[in-house]
Length: 302
Image (cartoon, rainbow, N blue to C red; front, top):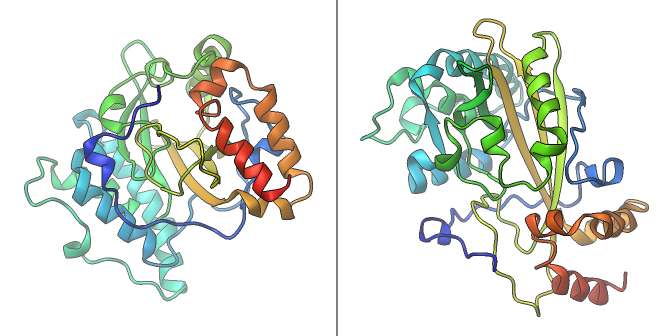
């Protein structure tokens, strides 16, 4: 049985960013759930905040969850600072040119009782200027990359407090087939990524509610008929000074019905779901969503 969200996330921050239609349709180009899917970056490296809703979402998430959405391990402070500088160098001029305001220190949502040093807060300040979540990966003594710092306010069914300090193999452990099929490719990619290449990849899923923050899978009413399409654009680049890998995650959510205006996007989605192996359908919650998908298709006559 898919568990309910824990008590901490039962009352989420109220902000929901639902877009009118899909910005990306990754399943149309790569229907497999487990795939590297790497490509050169297309478009801006990060998505600058053009309105206050994203910043409010992040501030509310940290006020509610604290170190469950923001953490920097001591070994990662320098890399987090370098990452933050690059984000601010890109985002702040964009904010000024669009008439936006850079938040003052009193508006940054840093808990008064935090044990983080002021230097450790630099990545949090930068994260308030972009819609993306920001993650720092660094190699350990054995060369395996570890998740060492993150501002993670829009997770897709995972918890920062369970992953911080973990290797890539450990981070991906819950995903069926991934470590066996592409784990080696992932390790080689991280080890060889040069500083002059910006890389992007995408994930997709269906969700029975339009919450940006999803720290757990969900329980589903089999009589429900509401669905949203959730797509992530992830970017990766190596930081030139520290050599750490900067990893960004930008979540987009739109009503599933909006895909009807995009050619064969819905047909390709049903094909991708049907072709997914049973263990991966379970991991994505698609087996539990099956009655909701059937209800949705009946309601929308597709």
